[in-house]
Every structure is written in structure tokens, then in C-alpha cells.
Length: 253
Image (tube, rainbow, N blue to C red):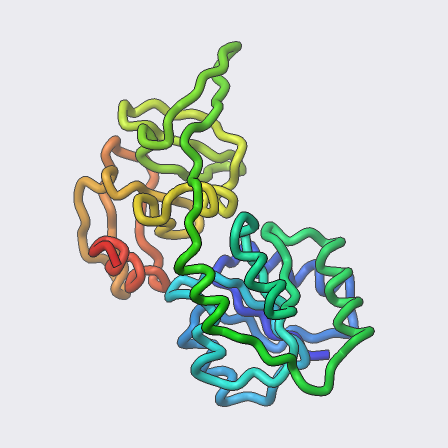
């Protein structure tokens, strides 16, 4: 069984590959792709896989756009962190999905379901209906965080957060007054909790607020170097895959 992975987070790809090797060692990962553009090119140039694992949100847009540009003739299992409003659209289209971060048991059940009821022809999917569901959905974003420091517990309004980052397997929030707090959410989870019009994930390590950007400089390979306020000791560079989308985000698109 040849499985194609479409996912723009390297850590998530490695985790999926590891779980697939444990769950179905006879399967082969045909390739792992990070964008709509690369996925369309691959599907036009290669034989169809037996199964596709596809993240909903890629660096260059919603992955449903892939299916509008090229025919996918095999079943697709979507992965999504948007469990508050997106799932109804999947149910209406009888499409299988897994919530991120993907658990081994859930992936195992999905693979078993696929093997047992493997269709000769992929089920029809109303892509426009799913896209409209995502675009029109109203989400109540997280208004505050509970943080702990020393023996104390306090709440911090999301509006007071400047940026979030991960370092040494810990996750941090830095506030506008330059204070740093450990938080209980990883960046994948945070992306689903905070307003994407205000905060943007520039790479695997950082989510920045529009108000925290002090200066931007051109960098190699079309990347962008960001100077943050409050300053951060770690260099913050927009990844190549996200640079185009980042510029659209800056313009409020």
C-alpha cells in the first residue's frame, strides 16, 4: 500500500511516518509534500497512491485547493486541529478525518477502516461546501491563558501576548511588557485557539503577533527576518514555505 503524506510541519510528518511503520509495516510512504503547489505537481507526475493523509491547513492555503486542481482517485484521510467547527463539514461529505495531534490509536483505526472498506473509486467530495464551511465559520478564540510562576497562578489576556515560541521542549508566551511564561499548549494547539488575523506561525518554532513585529528585513531564499518587540534572543525567520502566505497575512488578506 502506497501512502502519500501532505503535511507542512516536519515534526508531524516524522510522527506520521513512525506511526505508519508501526501500524502497517508493509506500507510504503510514496512521498511527503508541504504545499498545494508541490502536491498538485506530484499528483500530475506520479501514479495515484492508495491512500492520502492530508493536513487541512498548509503554508500556502487550504489543502482542498489541491482537489480543485487535480483529480485524486483514492481515499483521503484529512488531519485537522479545528475540532470546534470544521468537523460537521467532513461529516456531511462522509470524509474520514483525524484530529491533530494525531494519536496512534486513531490512525490505526482509520487505516483498519480503510483496509476493510477500501473502495474501488474514491467517494465524491463537495469541496466547495467544505471550503465555505471553513471560510464562513465563526470561532470564539481564546480570551485568556492561565499561567503558573513560582507558587502563583494568574491569568493573562490573549491581547497582552506578543508572541509564542517553543524551546527545549517547553512552550512559552511573551507578553507586551517583556515577561515570559511557560504555557500548557504546544504551537499546533495554539494555532487553533488564537485569532489567525492577529497571530501568524512563521515557522515550526514561533507564532508572532502582528503588533509584536518591530522591523522586517529581507533574508536568503526569499525569507524574511523579523525583529520582535519585546526582543527575543532567538533569531526569528519566516520559513521559505510560509513567506508568500506571511506577506498576504501582513496585508490583511
